[in-house]
Image (cartoon, rainbow, N blue to C red; front, side, top):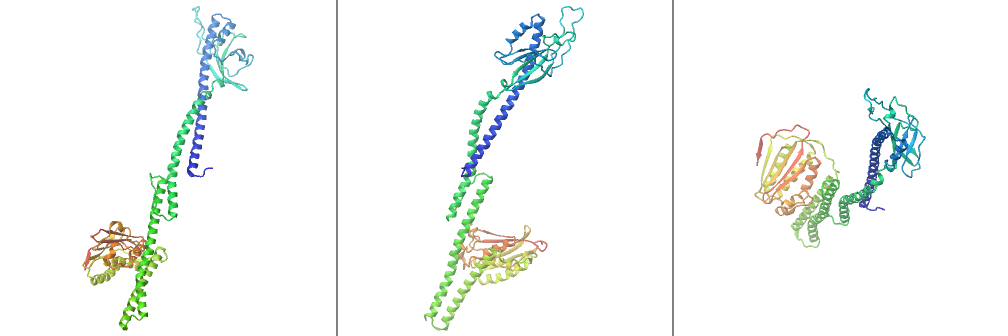
Length: 504
């Protein structure tokens, strides 16, 4: 029935709203009805008291009971019942509304209130009436008459309660006033207004529910369309994100995933192109010289030796490329297990620095080291960490023009060892710095040297991250490049940097 999430949410909101309004309406009617009945009961107490005093007054004036009854018949409300009871609680008269067939005369009512004592008139004060005390009000009672229920209140007659007075048969000792409960019910009055208010509230809250449902399902629909587009091969997909709730965080996660998928797809495409390019050049050379050797284009031993040397060099170049690709794949897949032993970083840097210094001298570069007297050890694979330093130094040496400078520094930072290699090369544009550690990325810096395979820094990053460290680049065009490696310490106490030694 409800095929979409939006329809299900709207239906759920509507059902919850309808149930809430129904419960609230029923509770409101019940509370108002209870308040109305309680108010009517208090009103019956007061009216019964007034009628009892009036009857006593008329009797004092000498009016007969028949006349008093006729007068009360014209005064009571259209739905009220008036009872006269004797001292035993027997109904001796029932004044009822016109057309009412109910007659309770001769029946007995219980729970009569106590009759108060009346103070007699003072001696020597003829004509003075006795002091009539405040009338005691009895409890509210109910008479169940099947389809109808009467609520009544009883008060004691003042004069009839005098201890010295004899309550004669047929003379009221109590007065009761009653009214049907259904005449006091408030629901017929408030039901329709509540129904109209409930319908208006339902409409407004339903509109709010529709808005809330669409605010939730809107981003989900965008993500669905974007996912379908990505399944068709269009990976550059983003969705609009607003707010910071769970749906917004899901949208942000989707955008991040989309960027990563697009980046991975681009890297995969570049990988195929770069591998094809890097293999095409040596294969072309090998094929050309092999063809020359077989078709008789070469003359003499020297030509054959030269051709064989080129074929060997190009084959070695292909071997290194394939070996690096395999190594990178094994590192990324976690196939190669790293050793976990204390590594003397300072000794490793001195060793790598000596080799780099020889290469720098041969290339016409200035190589400097700024190393402390001591460094803490790190826990890891010494051979792999030596490879990281070698790759970073090799990158700096290749992209620094003749007459430039390469500097190796080290120290402690943030609970670890920090190693940096700076060069005075052409630098890297800001938009390309995020791709420095991608496979085969060389960018414009490739023009400054032999280019290499573009895998050295990618391998270095995998090794550093496998040791729990990080590698970063800082560069600006024309100002050189600095690569920083940070490794967490372990296996020894952290040492102070101490005095630096500067070698050339």
